[in-house]
Length: 154
Image (cartoon, rainbow, N blue to C red; front, side, top):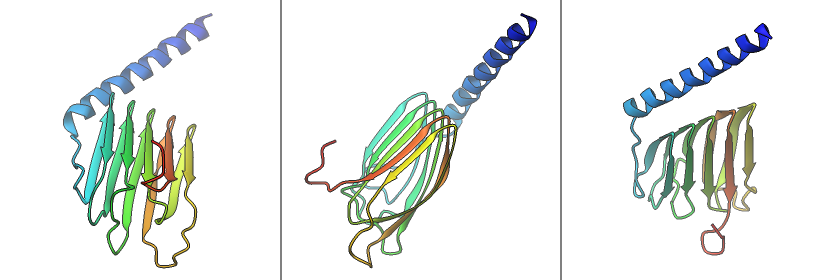
């Protein structure tokens, strides 16, 4: 019984500490980027962010979800000529990214007690722009899908 009590108190303390740290980071690290931004730095802690990008030369950026969620729709954005790079990090949260079906996506995403789902078909055009994804999902998830902007449902 003592072991169970000690484990329970330790677990409660761990999660309380994680929540307090997340609350402190939320105040210290603001999100940057809007619908016209070519680079974004999105931070969702204890909340959510939705962004539908219309960037004319999207270069990428970073997304960090900690006890929160981020949904980004890049189907109306144009990728920069040299391609783009996104750092995606989900810790007890989730990130969902929609890309146009004409983009090539190279994923280097890792998962630990979470999930990564990248469902993007290889485009027919060998010169298609490439979006490179790096990052991880720990106790959370990252989803990347490609659908055409005109015919896809949200």
